[in-house]
Length: 244
Length: 342
Ligand SMILES: Nc1ncnc2c1ncn2[C@@H]1O[C@H](COP(=O)(O)OP(=O)(O)O)[C@@H](O)[C@H]1O
Ligand SMILES: [Mg+2]
Image (cartoon, rainbow over all chains, first blue to last red; front, side, top):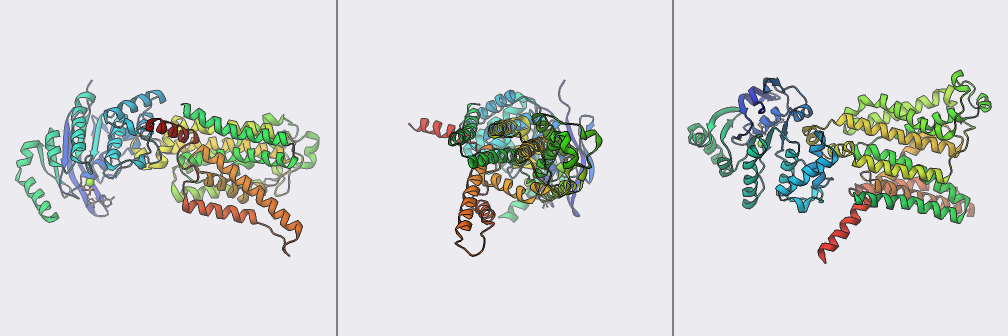
């Protein structure tokens, strides 16, 4: 039986009066890669926080198939199969890289031995084996990001939500990451939601795009169609111009 | 795996070396100091089990030491002495007189049971709130000990506890505590708890049931503290509730913090160092006082020095002497690095 889809329905999030999300709906199915893009402050991170239970909803629901998961604690949502990375990396700094990755498997009920095997395999896939015994705190920025993704995968998630995974990586690292991420839906059957500002990465990786601006959806659909959407160009050029 | 065994071998070896040395010397004072060191080691390791893995400072620990000490005392004071030592003791307990070895284990179990009930609602708290409630818990336990005259003789000294703890017993329990602390640290619970210690949000997002794991560690820590307290009671043979309060809390915390709360190695090294420093300073203090070099008696130097050492460590090496890696892992890494280099 294929996994059910993850459905965000008309979700709203408020921070002391500010509407960070205002009626956003999004569906993520197993086996697909969706890019969540938009200018800074448009509500992308808040979207992941809303899906994983880190912020309370002011409206709407998050559904996993027929089951409502919004309102559950982040822990219970994680056990339902949602795994995430953080925009500002959150590693277990006083633990080794291997222990970091193992912890996710352990939290999902693996035995110590299985967790170790899983973690070693993942470290190999991410080219992190030489770092296995180093402490989280001692890693380079790019390595920290990779460990965080490997850790999220060790939970064997049905859905993986990545918040700017390529930020701070150089071109070669980004290329390697793209290669790994692109293979995940096939090899693991998971649905991948990815936030990133690297448009070349997003365009090459994603089947569909979802564009936010000021907490609202301004466009969604096939990647190359969305790219030509005037509202998107406007939002991006506007923000790029303002940033420059 | 082998590095864990190496850690156990080194730390247990340290304890055994101490015992062998003291037994060889055959000096009574050293025997007393070494026995006290082993008992402190049990208490510090118990605290490490909770504090080191959860990252939460707990003041309540020594309260559970008291629970263990009083439980074991009440169960072992000879029946004919109970009339004098505990005149208001409940009828059911008057006739009971167990072997101290069984009573010590019961002491640990009762401390664990009390901890299990009292701490469950507290384990959701983090940071300052958790520290303050643990302190409140110590005060509550102390107040109960000073006022429950039927079983503790109130604030007065409780006499007549049979002597059962000697250096080999204390050392054996200390070695067991080393093994228990390391095994817990490497268990599923210990690993996930350490993840939550480093980042609560990330651990929660992985599905770690943080409050439940903290509770397990707290109960195990109380069990070890109860055993330590009972051991101590059967060594000192008379005590009052003040033995289980702020001074002891401060000393045990000092040992753990100086050595490094995150590692079992730190707990062991901290206990050895602080005990060594304490006993030396006390000897110097005694010598100064008997030589009458100063007009007034010199008192409290040991406490002041411990406090200063703690402050210095917290400033210059906040994680303690062994902040992250166990001694076995450190040596194994050195060895493999050298192999790679050559
Ligand atoms: N915890 C918070 N408290 C208050 N405001 C927040 C919080 N998190 C995000 N915001 C606000 O919500 C808006 C959306 O933020 P965010 O989701 O981080 O944007 P993005 O990830 O798209 O850059 C921003 O205006 C931000 O300042
Ligand atoms: Mg963001």
